[in-house]
Amino acid sequence: MTASPLAPAWLRHPDDGNALDAAVWPQHASRDASGGITIAGVSASSLAERFGTPLYVIDEADARTRARGIRDAFAAEAAAVGTTATVYYAAKALLTIDVARWMAEDGLWIDVCSGGELAVALAAGADPARLGLHGNNKSVAEIDRAVGAGLGVIVIDSAVEIERVAEAAARHGRVQAVRLRVNSGVHAHTHDFLATAHEDQKFGVRLDQAVEYAAAIRSHDSLRFLGLHCHIGSQIFGSDGFAESAARLLEVHAELLAGGEVPGLNLGGGFGIAYTSADDPTPIAELAHAIVGSVARECARVGIPLPALAFEPGRSIVGPAGITLYEVGTVKDVLVTVPGEHAEPATEAVRRYVSVDGGMSDNARTALYGAEYSVRLASRVTDAQPALVRIAGKHCESGDIVVNADYLPGDVRPGDLLAVPATGAYCFSLSSNYNYLTRPAVVAVAGGEARLLVRRETEHDLLARDVAYSGGPR
Image (cartoon, rainbow, N blue to C red; front, side, top):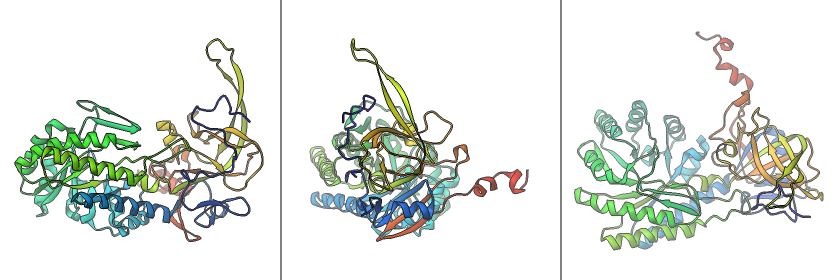
């Protein structure tokens, strides 16, 4: 059967519409004897029955194995060139108390970006000395809480933050370690990167301001300057962008050494994952070898000691470990006109809209970024020929799409359970109550058992915030 003319160029027509691509699905995903999808020995159907849909499901062992693998890969490469590497988990990807505990237990530090994320990490019992605080607009209260809690590092994002952090540290009688976030002029996404003189973005300061800002930091007895921090983008395949950014940072790092110690360099995160079978992310071991090697070569060229390195992965740890389960509500075929190429006449093709009980409130990435995802029937297998589908949400927005294009068996019907893989990162984190939908539960599966991490919201939860309903002060 030929591919639909409505299919994007990257999407291959599958030989088997039931197959699970190991590159996209969690490590412990498979189909059982009845044809249903199981994750870590727990059937998707039983999860949906017990916890409802939509439902976020995290393969705990997969996430933790990835965390340890990234930690070990960078540590080994750093040791091979005579330095160390610290891996922070970028909590914005997915944060619950249990997830924070996993990361801490597996030897990662944790990077938080708000007072709320800090509260979760502290509630998890994470060692404050192994936490870092990011953000372009940290409030005075957030800074004070972080300093008072004994956070290991705060990333300075602007001139005013130097004074705010210094004042908080002096007030608490501490010397607060800080990094300075800079823009290297390198912006990377997938296989490409762009190198310019300056970047137009809200984060950090210009690289040519780093010496001035570092001097301001060093002028405060309550601050300790650890070095530079840079983040060049997200969903990055390959190491070239990191190498270019590191080269630029290390030129300035060498200048900064003239004014005092610069013990570290944080190169951020953004390592890409596979969302579809067309994606080909660089294996972490290869990334670690290439990035650390480029730093070592650049330090040798400039003639400076190797700094201690730090990295901040998030998506690459939890993204592939997660799936989202949905129940099909309606199936609708829409006749679409396909423009002809060159002088060829237009043709018509059918797009099948499969609507589910969630949407942009549980996965905003498709609407926000045009993100691509895959989908499979989770409750059964079938011999029906694959048909091109678009998985639509139930919100009152035409852009409320979960999966833009994939192939499902042509007999997909109301009541079927669908699974969308690679949703462990930035789906729960970006979830909302649009149209007053309740946010889904988050469940971890491991060793044939399911454990609730975050309960499903109820309509009472939503109404309880409304003063007219709760009887609170007006």
